[in-house]
Image (cartoon, rainbow, N blue to C red; front, side):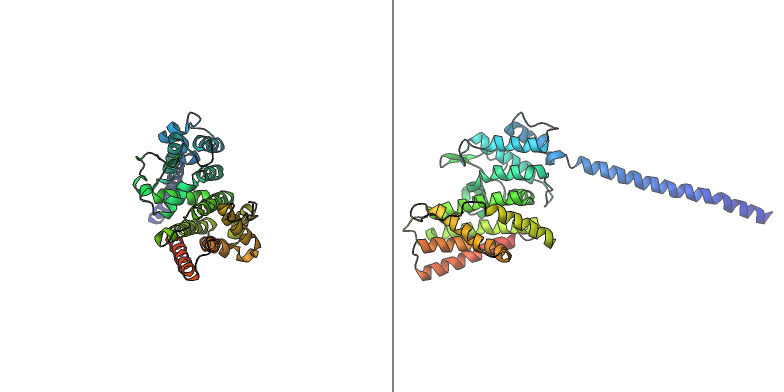
Length: 330
């Protein structure tokens, strides 16, 4: 009888273990489902911009929960663009600032931006290229003092200027730059801005007045180089495809050098684009990374700068670009 009872007890234990195992599996499945649902809730559509109260207020009534990301991108461009390129009202500049803060003021160091928002945000930011330039260069005290989210845009030079914290801007730019078309828009806007600022340096400038602008340009471009590295990632084939798209977009720009005396900024921009076009495909990434140096060299030559001063200046420019690039490395 003892043997019979033992066998009977063993046979009854099998379904008990099976039910226990099934219960554990169900619990795990439930936990996974809950994690998935909670994760979905923390990633609202369009990166939560449509639900952000500040964005709703400054961008306008077109923004509401449920709006498509493509329509939201159009609304952002419309609300932030001036009647003339680079000329903005306080309301337009505030809308741009609110959007950048809503997107970039997050704990995560990497933002997965909805693809439909990348080019529209790049288009909007490109219209604020002088502000983006100064924020990237990081050497203007007025931009530093007005970077907080509670600091409104200020009037200067016939338009309203805006500033945001450096970390907020660079995270936003990294997210936008995943799209090579968007990155090319930002790069071209910075190129034109850098050329215009070089052209504005007084003919009799010397010392820091002479060197400040080319080194600031190199710093801004160096940060954009670091953002490009982050956008391309470790996949060599994908990175090459990204770079090729950027180059194709840049080389569609006008590349017929104007006379320096007639149009100094246009001359600097067109000369650099022509040099990029003349560079063999495999060497173009290095040519882009040397942009600050190359534009400063063309500028120095056009000014007939003394060789010793030119060499020292170009060395400073190269160091500025390299340091900025290194700062952006993870």
